[in-house]
Image (cartoon, rainbow, N blue to C red; front, top):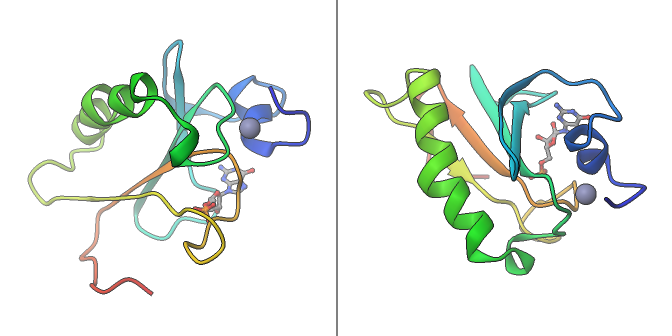
Length: 113
Ligand code: 5GP
Ligand code: ZN
């Protein structure tokens, strides 16, 4: 756990947050500042600053196992959804602990801002 990292604190329950999903590798919770009716953050418990640092055992688990559970739980399969991983300064990353945004419940636009 990284001492100054907000998502480490959430993942290790130092800050009380309601999880919509959790297992031994990953937690998921609602974004504080939602950009869509459904806006979930999927966060590995282990601290990886960004996607390039994370092993396939984590990213594969998120995309193959966790996303389908959340898509089912929030009823996103029929209308679709968007997954986002902001990375680095130009990528718009503001929290330096890997997280996958799951957004749904409205029409998305392209290109993103
Ligand atoms: P990024 O910009 O790094 O891709 O996304 C960080 C996200 O984390 C933002 O959407 C922001 O609203 C969310 N966020 C930041 N701090 C907290 C927090 O303490 N709790 C929750 N639930 N979300 C947070
Ligand atoms: Zn962290």
